Amino acid sequence: MKENKLETFNEDEQDVLNSVRTSRIIFPILIGLGVVFYLLYQQFDPNEFAKIEWKQHTQFWVLMSFLLLIVRHIAYATRLRILTEGEFSWKKCIELIFIWEFSSAVSPTSVGGSAVAMVVLAQEKLPAAKTTTLVLYSAVLDTIFFVGVLPILFLFFGTNMIRPNMNSLADIDGWAYTFFGAYIFMAMYGALFFYGLFVNPRTIKRIIVSATRLGFLKKYQEKAISLGDDIIIASKELVKKKWSFHIGGFLSTATAWSCRFLLLNCLIIAFVNISTDFNTQSNLYARLQTMYVIMAFSPTPGGAGFAEVLFGGFLSDYVNSGTIALVIAFIWRLFTYYLYLLVGVIVIPNWIKNVINDRKLKRLQDEKNEEI
Image 1: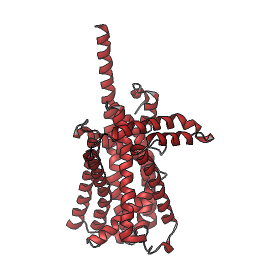
Image 2 (image 1 turned 30 degrees about the vertical axis):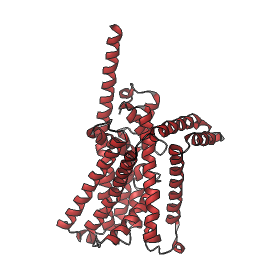
Image 3 (image 1 turned 120 degrees about the vertical axis):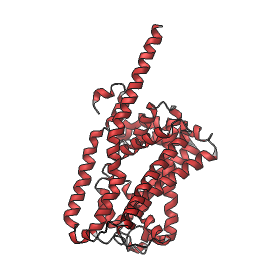
Image 4 (image 1 turned 135 degrees about the vertical axis):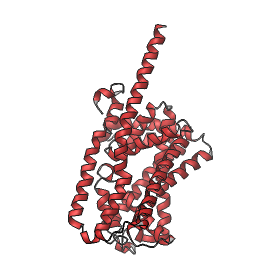
């Protein structure tokens, strides 16, 4: 993505789009593959690998995992269509989710997928109020799913859903503390945005802006004021919506996230002799959702490298072979991460080209109108 191709975007838009330029895939790929090769060097056992039977059972469950990936993508596209109230076609929603997922995979934490989503949706001529509502409410829906589902899973499976062989709080370790800390942080910012969107947006704006009075945060004051204004706009939009809008948004969110974890359930069934009964698979699902809470705060783009390391430790009681764990982790990341990097390389330049062409046509039309 060259600078001259972004000449029709303003400075802020250029900064955000530069953060997801397709050349950025090199860094996470190098991290991810570097970690994989290191783990292969440390853990790979040719004898264990030879035991894998690529028969109908394995092929079926790998295919099921890929189908769940497709369902997940469609669920996100459905949420986008619901929250935009049909402003975009299904094709456009699917394309925009590819861009959103790509941005999450390569963006630094200081930018994030939401910032990119704001810019992308603005180029699609979506009203500013609806853009703000969509992005902020999507974040709230994601948080509601996590914050709401994890305590329910904890009631059924207890501390064993956090780490292998953790049978009580007495066995708590560093990863468990990390999980609880990440969960509390997630619950706090989710509650903050929920309160701001549905209860008192002006108070939240004052809190956010007041925080920037601290010396090292003063440079963010302008952005804090803008975020506060966005919350007020989004709140006014959301209070007008019918229950069907909220229910549809939550159900599509829950479907997308559930498919994200069930995909890994299927891959583990494919390569490990594990029971497929409801209790076993539910316990495994709970462990996977716990793992993702920690992954969400990964210091690397899209969890590159971090996810592969985390996988083996979190699931050692289900996948006790390091070699098999590496195979499952590689296919998992291939489907859910590297595939989006590859598709993003194709989709994003084409999307930018179309936006630039639309702007040029509009500019030519405006010039003709002025002449007339």
